[in-house]
Image (cartoon, rainbow, N blue to C red; front, side):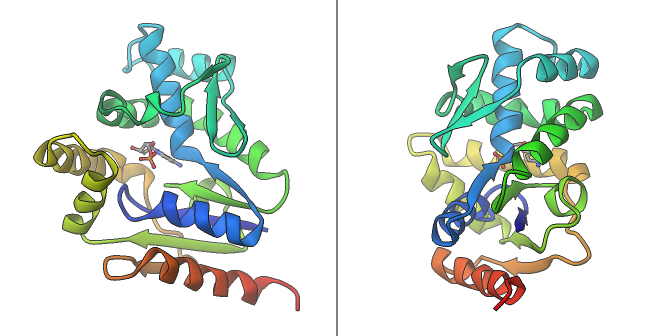
Amino acid sequence: MIVAIDGPAGAGKSTVARRLAARLGFRYLDTGAMYRALTWLALEHGRSLDDGAALGALAREYPITFAQQDLVLIDAVDVTSAIRDSRIDKVVSSVARHPEVREVMRERQRELGSLGDVVIEGRDIGTVVAPGAEVKVFLNADEVERARRRIAERPGRAADALATDLRLRDERDAAQMQAADDAERIDTTALTIDEVVERIEELVRARQPA
Ligand code: DC
């Protein structure tokens, strides 16, 4: 079974998807981490972030791998913490907007998603990567709450700069982000993580054979 979880930054996707996958015994695939890893490599190689063809070629040459569930590797380098840097937050949307990049990433995401029961988190999972997913969820939360969560996740960084980054990223990611018509929309603003996980678990159970 595929559980697709889409939504904007700060809606709670990563925490919810991880916990849900652990509770169900499903694998977890963080597609945002893949765009972040490619962005890290492009900066490392000094590539222009405007050159979609070159970035697509880079993505094809260096497939992203995951180890022990949570480690993200590209070109055999463990980039798990480097990809959460503010320098990546600021420019990852510029890399993710290129169709050449998205084509390679989506292929790899389908490949990684075809290995068994999985929770896949991203922006275009229910619409493009896995339109046949048995369960689709679109998480959202109000802007102030999303900024508050991002600030809590990134201690030591200026709150107003984080809120601005989030707003800019929302604008840039908008093209990629649409809820699938058959997605269950959940507003997480006033919900705990466990409440969100439980709601999705109910949807999963309803789709599982008795
Ligand atoms: O979820 P995240 O913040 O780690 O995602 C990083 C960036 O990658 C985000 O700005 C949008 C992009 N992204 C995307 O375009 N499509 C996806 N399926 C996942 C992420």
